Amino acid sequence: MDEVGGAKSEGNKSMLLKAYQFIRWPAVLGILALSATFFFTGLLNSLGYNGTTELRKTYINSTEWSSFTNSFSSTPSRGTPFKWAGMQPSVSGEYVNFDQRLIKTLEYLKNGSVSKSATCGWNSSHENLPIDVNYASEWSIYTTPPDKTTPISTIYRGVGLRISQADYIKCTIHPKTPYCSYQVPEKFPIGDPDGFPISLSSNNPLNPTQPYDKANCQVTCASDYYPLLADPAESTPPVHNSEVIKLANYDPKIPFDYEQINSFSRKAALLKSILITYELTHIDDPGCESAQGNTGYDRLVPITLITQKWVREDLGDDNWGKMIDMAEKKFPFGFQRSSPLAALSYDSVLNVLGIHWNF
Image (tube, rainbow, N blue to C red; front, side, top):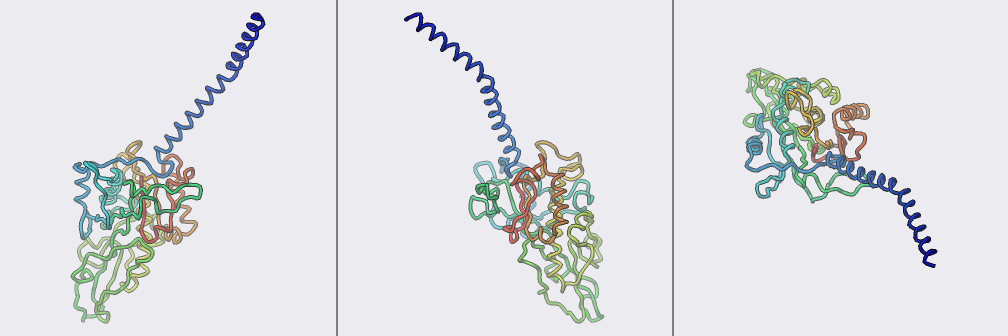
């Protein structure tokens, strides 16, 4: 019996050995494949495949933060274009809950491209950029794809922001008859010559409510410069990239009558939304944010850039398609095609809030 039992035991061991030899390599390969899947999934997430990345904290005592906060003003103008549109980023110990990359993109919009040419969007810099970091809750308010759960708000996390206004429509009052009180062109409105802020909201157009002597005077306006003013520093229009003008179907160099400011404020808002989108998608090009361009860890193209739905509607299918073509070339890792949450998109929630970007 012992010999028979021993033979059976040896036979069982032999079968187990054969089974082990049969499955070991498929098992090893399966484990390696699973590990690789987890690794690449983690890598894609860290790169922003799901529409965001980890916060790069800002030291509250850093030169970077100090320089940025020095660019704030209650009456924004060129060089100091920022103000908080409500809430400010929270502070935790020595850190500000506001991503370093957001600061760099805003500083770029404030300073203009290092090339000072229209290649990066225009040859000027922004004068008025109220920063909206208000949030209704810690959860995103934007439209989420049906197969995705609602993510934590990127604004709440400190890696996102919105811009609710961009720059000014500027007007000049000048004589229509010899009886006008302003025979030499002056900034309008008199006593408050900072210009009219261009809202990126769909429900906040400018209206011609400022009084003036319509019988004898005329008020002429334009985006970003004062038409007819004697000072060339203030009366010279900036040069925009031709693609921006084509997409907006509006040439901001052409002045218009103040009484038409309602319709032209919408045109200007469309132009500004396209311009900021263009600037941010080209920010890493040589001559834009830096002379050499940005690569790798230094890249500043936002992970996600969401414009207002009204902008998409005003652009129409053909021009929106051109924006998508541009985004496919500029956003990294093929995210424009492959990711449901990253790269360029639009959202009706932003119609009353402005343009959004995040890292």
